[in-house]
Image 1 (cartoon, one colour):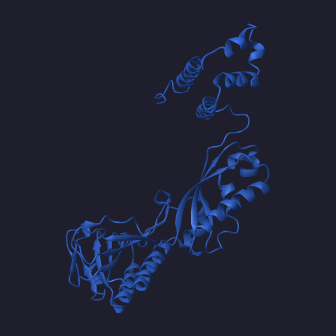
Image 2: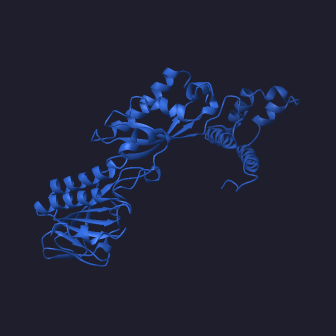
Image 3: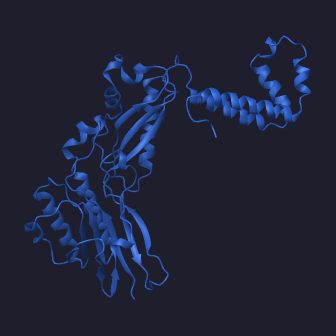
Length: 352
């Protein structure tokens, strides 16, 4: 048997709107529907350049409210494949398509009634149910973050005991990502601009194709020393002020990186430490202390550093600690961890 190679994509979702947040809505809303079209166009270009035997599409082709534009576009793209001798198998699992539009598709398009129907290419037969469907071709919101695209599948020339080869190819025209920005060291507008530039350059550096833009859900962490740097003088104005500041001059770039939505998980310098932070610090110090060569020396150093020995009335505290066995210090460390576990998790499940 000859090996068979095909491109497998799911959920084109033409004309489905993007779930834009406050940050990118004003900039992208007029062309929010273009990205699914561009991703589909890239899919066809990939099929042509890879010389596949056929393209298999499944899932939702178009939004239920789509108009003639989506059908004409699909017909045009399928015709490009047909003229290149590349067949198309389509399993539409979304809104039923109007028969008047189905008649416009080229003869090379085969419509599958279900996932159990076989695809026949040359002298090979393949069931779509044998492979799980890939993620939707184009992410529509932050819950669909990360690379999106299609699978390039090669069926081996000898099917016995051989799995199909699968290669993921990123084809999305817009990528959603999640990002955290630690603001602890930001003390001026200049610091904010530099930190944000580093974030954007990091995402742009990942791209092999400079034209693929990114929308970010940005989470602020750390200690926010001066809120006016981020939100302006009037805090009640909300995060849109910050996103507008971060997104300035980005909308005109092809490979833009925009803050689309924002969450603030920061502390102010006057806030009390959170239980999770205290616990993390305690366990980190406990692990460091336990890793010391001499546990008794480590205990003495810790008590001296914190000035605790100055407040101990008994003059024999130091000799007492120095005479403790390693087992005694281990027991003391365990009791401290148990106490921390109780106070940090007394209203939740205990630390395992």
